[in-house]
Figure: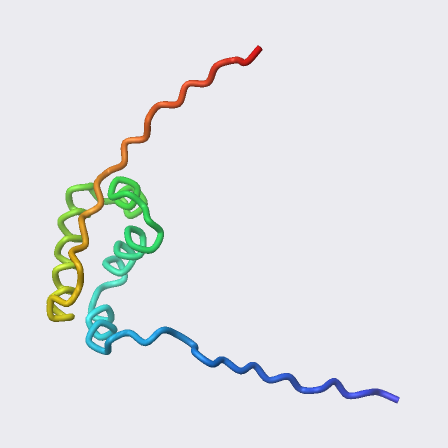
Length: 101
């Protein structure tokens, strides 16, 4: 006797958040490197220095391109977004360790 396994169905009520179609279309026009740049800075929260290093480009080039991309997205949305500041390089303080007795 070989009992049959019941079939399971996966039900997804909301597969993805709804983005404005104009935003989705504009992001589709960006090159893969431009989308990567946005993802590194906005999603992964890397500093401009870290993102530029990851992409192998100068920091100034990344900052200029990032500003241009954000302006394109703002124009696409009709200026309905809050200003997105250009991330500044993060200066991490030097940590000094001392021996605890």
